Amino acid sequence: MKLQLNYFVSLLLIVAFSFGCSTKDSEVEIKESTIDLLSNEYPGWAIAYSGYRNGDDPRSKIFPTQEEVLEDLKILEKNWKIIRTYGADQHLVDVLEVISRENINLKVMLGIWLDGEPKYIEDNLNQLELGIELANKYKEIVIAINVGNESQVYWSDHKVPQEQLITYIKEVQVKTTVPVTTADTWDYWADLEKSQKVIDAVDFIATHIYPVWGRIDIDRGMEVTLHTYDSLKTEIPNKKIIITEAGWPTYTEGDLHAPKAGDEVKQNIYFNELMKWSEANNVIVFNFASFDESWKGTGTEGHWGIFSENRKAKLVMKNLYPELVSDEPTSPEYK
Figure 1 (cartoon, rainbow, N blue to C red):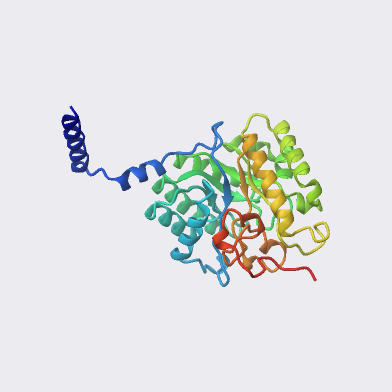
Figure 2: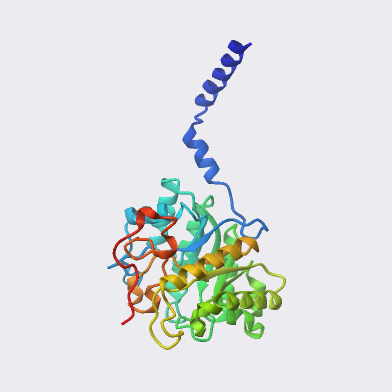
């Protein structure tokens, strides 16, 4: 009986090999399982990703190399399931090519960047065209599309007329097969007189919540985050709400924050409280952000990463990434 069983198993292996089945193929098949952002199943950690390092600048079309992108994605795939990108450009092309070629176990919420109109209409149409093309080319990777980032809130420096934004959203919905939204701040979404038409157009609400910008310090960081989220749920009860940006900087400058609001200890507290709450309450939260980006300046905007620009672990990541701990400071010190 044992001989017969071994013979039968061997025969099955030969047949499988003949049809081109291999261990590697099986691994790819597992990694290509879908994540449905609109389902009630918690998909795991999500994070905002831009790979711009010292000397890179999307405004000048100086992008990271694919080797650098691969390094980043290998760091992130250890603990995250989903990344959010921002522009339909060469950086996005490289990210999707690397994930596909190297079998990186990450899904992507694909970003289509919209600049201010009417000046940048042609640029926006190019973003739209490439974003749609890539979403359809990489259907096993792209699980949602975000059209425009903070293009409606009153202080935006790249505003797009509301009706034009809705037209763009509907075009992407028609030409792709995944949920489509636009990302904006919580106060824009909460002002239903301004946002209701966009709410009706999107497949889910993509909101940004940043207590630190309201001069809130860490002692009330989670309290304000939860109050803001719960208020949005009350105002918009019939759409799934995903927090597509939330985080705590490790250095702050200017008068829009509590004094010395940013530091690594505070980031560590906020991140861990936020992730614990998100999983317990099945709320998808994209932490902002993966890595510091010096092209954004030396102040607050350049220091939201949970890793430094040199890909070293800040305090919040030291236990998860002991191999990336550095003896050098990973955030500026206050003078």
